[in-house]
Amino acid sequence: MSMFTYIHWDVNPEIFHIGFLSIRWYGLMFALSFILGYHMVEKTFKAEKENLKWLESLLVYIVVGTILGARLGHVFFYDWDYYSQNPVEIIKVWRGGLASHGGVIGIFIALLIFSKKISHRNVFWTIDRVIIPTALAAMFIRLGNLFNSEIYGIETSLPWGFIFERNGEVLPKHPTQLYEALAYFLTFLILRTIHRKTDAMKKTGLLSGIFFILVFTARFVIEFIKEDQEAFEASMTLNMGQWLSIPFILAGIGLIVWANRKKS
Image (cartoon, rainbow, N blue to C red; front, side):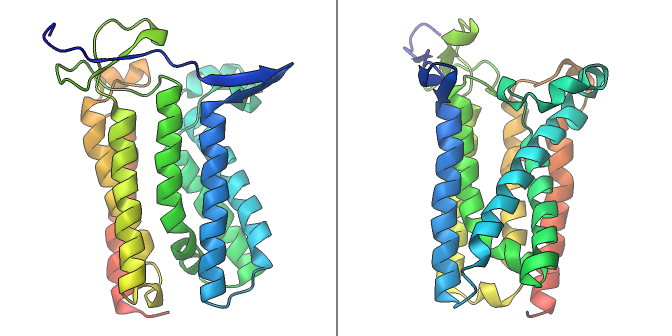
């Protein structure tokens, strides 16, 4: 292994702080994903001559759904034994602990409520219009994980292995955050191309189905070279991330079949 230099990663997750206020790379990536997403959805709404007054409410629903869903997903899927004994810790989101599968569920519930109360459209009509920037947001969040030196892979001898020195690592590990970020960026490009070149938006649920299949298949595969997030996963044939990905992949297949049978 000494024939390679590898990448020594020791980036401070905090950009700067002012008093008690800490600005971190993860938070910056999180905020950037929402800002870009808002403008992309706004452009879509303008092109389709939809009600622009919905956008601010839509943003609030998505932000709240993302944070609550991701936090509760981590609590219930990964560390319920701890949080059931320390419920006050659930609200301490700043200490870390967000699960992407929970975030997706949270967004779905939020958009379901939004669709019922505000747009009065099929929930997948709404999801189809936010799913492309969602893929881009997923990329930014994984880059945030890289800056946090978290959620990385097992040991590797590949020359692009990262030695996460801030965590006390001395051996190169797969930078699975970058693998996932690349997969999500490719998903974004594919969805954007389909949106521009085809009549996919006329088939409610089609873009959502493609998103679920591409994103969660990538997640399922990459999990094979990712370190377990919790100790209990060591005894599992598939880890928690993989088990949680399977229903989304199946849902994606179902959505594509449904979308091609029914036009909006």
